[in-house]
Structures are given as structure tokens and as C-alpha cells.
Amino acid sequence: MLWRSRSSTPRRYPPGFIAPCLPSNAQAVPAGAQWIYEIKHDGFRFICRRDGERVRVYSRNGRDWTDRVPLIAEAVAKLKVKSVTPDGEGVVCRADGVPDFDRLRAAVGRLGSRDAFLYAFDLLELDGENMRPYEWHVRRATLRSLIKRAGPGIRLSEHLDGDGGAAFRHACRMGLEGIVAKRRDRPYRSRRSPDWVKIKNPEHPAKARSMTWEE
Image (cartoon, rainbow, N blue to C red; front, side, top):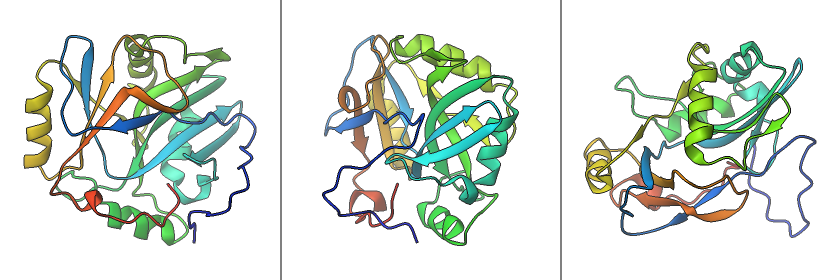
């Protein structure tokens, strides 16, 4: 079982791993023309890495989960690139399309499941080029083009422009975890960032869930 380490020893990341950008928590939805809004999918954060024929799916802390999520690994392997590093959320969905964290946890706990797929929302590297300095809207357009013919293991995490408050209320009505607001004019930064803001649905189980599994 993949339990979160409580050791104070600094973690050594595997070669090629890029630490993720982490959203800041907020109570209010930021507004303005420079903000876009994405659904916060209830799953495990994955940084996928393809280098030639080698594919790895890492947790946000650099643990190798490749053998647990074969559908994601296969989709990354089929992309027509030499190297790529997409960022996203691994999920297992119910019949109504809503991500179910307990089903995901049970699936990967059985040492592998083809039910898990990736909602990709960012692109950190492509064919040797560091994409992180580019603004969000450039990375997003490149990601959309890259995965539009990808297999079922990767889907684009869609975004909304305009009324963030309406997007948040819609997410809550659907029973989703919440939304993440992102600045469209900012680069990708591997740390806790004010450019990404997470607003949680107060009625969702994730609000009070104690995370003991490695994400």
C-alpha cells in the first residue's frame, strides 16, 4: 500500500521528474479577464513522463505508479512525440461521469486498474523544450492539439471563461469537489502558487477527508 511518508528526510525525485504546481486555497472565487476556471477532479495528481520508449506515471511526490494505471501509461506511450511531460489528475468515474475517489483508491489498491484515466490540464515539456516559462494559454493550446487524438487513457480537462462564481455553483450542484481558478497569463511554477487558486465545495467529502494515501 502506498502510504504517505512522514519522514523528515528530503525526498529524492527520480530523473526527469518535475515537481507540480500546487494551488493555493481560497474561500472566494477570483474574478477578472485573466482568470480561467477548471473543475477540480477528485483523484490523484499525476505527472506523466515519456522519454523515448520509456513511460512513467508519477505521483505528485515522485512515486512511480506506472503499473497501477496501465491505460494512462499506454496513452502517453502512443503520443507522437519523442518526449513529453503532461500534468493532470488520475480519476475513476461513476456511470454518471463524476469522479469517485473511493473507486480510484480501491482500483489502484488492487495493484492495477484499467478504469483509471488522466484528466490532463497542463504541459510541462515537449520534445526537449521546457514549456513551463510559457503562459498558461500557450501551454493549454499545445496540450489540446497534442492529445486530441489520444487514446481513452487521456482526456483534456476542459476550462471555462467568464463567470467563475457560476462555474463554482455549477460544480457544487453536480456534487463535484470544486474548481481551480488559474491565471491565463502566468508561467508554470513548481511550488504552491497564488496563480492557481482552489475553491472547494463545502459539501464534498474531500473537504473533510484525511489523506493517508500518497497522491
